[in-house]
Amino acid sequence: MSASGPRLQPTLFELSKPGRGSGKVPHPPHDALDRLPAEHRRDTPPALPEVNEPEAVRHWVNLSQMNHAVDTGFYPLGSCTMKWNPKVNEWAARQPGFAQLHPLAPDAVAQGTLQLLWELEQILIEISGMRAVTLQPAAGAHGELTGILMVREYHRSRGDANRTDVLVPDSAHGTNPATATMAGLRTISIKAAPNGRTDLEAFRTALGPSTAAVMITNPSTMGLFESEVGELIDAVHAAGALAYMDGANLNAILGRFKPGEAGFDVMHINTHKTFSTPHGGGGPGAGPVAVGETLEPFLPAPRVLREPDGSFRLERAGERPTSIGRMRSFVGSTGVLVRAYAYLRTHGASGLAEITDDAVLAANYLKQRLADSGAYDIPFPGPCKHEFIASATSIKRKTGVRTLDIAKRLLDHGFHAPTVYFPLTVDEAMLIEPTETESIETLDAFADALIAIAAEAETEPEVVKTAPHTAPVRRLDEAGAARNPNLRWRPAAGAWTPCPD
Image (tube, rainbow, N blue to C red; front, side, top):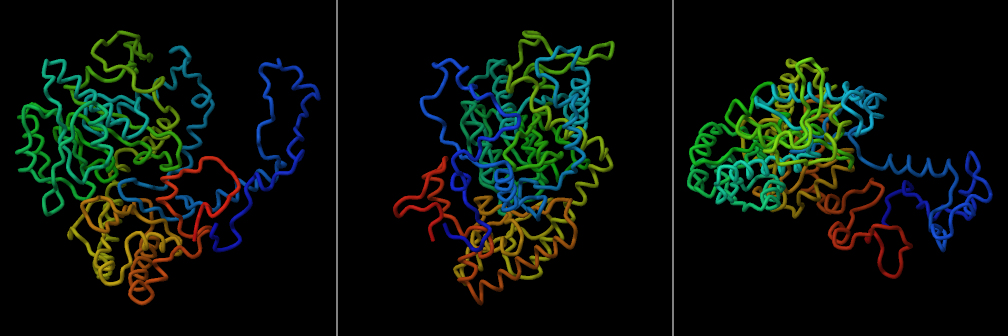
């Protein structure tokens, strides 16, 4: 393994010593294993490392400090909204009344949680301008699938089973076409207009009797607001199809634009991007789906209902036969939803609008700094929303340094890279989203680092091409790791090493 310094450490297996991990507090009886029936005992002990408690704790804490995280540095992933999230929302989600409530608890015992979920739905209805919300989906992609399944069921309920096409811009998230495929529909990719926005005429030409839905991200993955979205939605509805809005970029329009009022029929909301839960840690997410009147009958079951006496309950089995059924166990990722509720109640309507204003301001400031430097290509000049695209095409042409090299070199400057090579329609793309939570000093430092790396590519291109130089490990063989995943530890043997030079 190629290391740049002493930060790498032995694995737990290499630290292991026979008998070292046997001390337990309280100590188990000496005959504990003998008390188990022989048919339930292993023939050989599990091959687990044996270390004492301090060694185990130090091992994992040291590993955690080798990671780049939003708690330790800037994380400008475009289209992912890696924002700072208030720790008080973690406290709220850990409250025993929420965290220790059994998911099968009777409605009478779960009134507090049911009320919170119902109130969260009402807040999301107001934010989205929609008619109703389901909190079941586990993430944005799961929300997409939920929305498109409702669209499919809507058409089938009307005897219109021939609507099998979903129109998607070529700059869309990869989950959009995957969603259509999983729902048994066909994706039709529509090229963007030269200005990066939706090509309205191309969509109008593609619309027809086989179109089930159009999926649009607004603002788009180009960081641009779709200024002709009203005309597009009118054309979609005139063709008998429905309009889906990918809510991944909701951080740019909170309190300023309501998709439902614009005519969208369905959208998902990434609460783990927009409303507090730390994003990207591999834990649970939540992707509530908001719908207009047309799709309300098809929402997943069970929904949280408020009774005339003010109490709350879950829908009973079979109570709403038009439902597409259950999309998630129980009522969804409740802990994530508690965080979202705390975040929303803390900020209020005016605070959400300020989030949008600050996110848009930060992105435009950073975009202008890079544009003024001339170090990078800016494919779509002019104002953006909460994110923007910079390209290293000119740098690659002159020096051979590519976007991936720049991304790795940023680690040496203490920054995580932005999203790279997305959207696919822009060569050597960097999709940069500073979010509303970063200070101007952080934005300036990030811009300075990007500009310095561009200058370094001119004078010392090999330094950039071989970065990172200060990370715990040097550049990994990412393609090799993807093709030959090593999911368990074993000693390196022969010529193979996990991170070859």
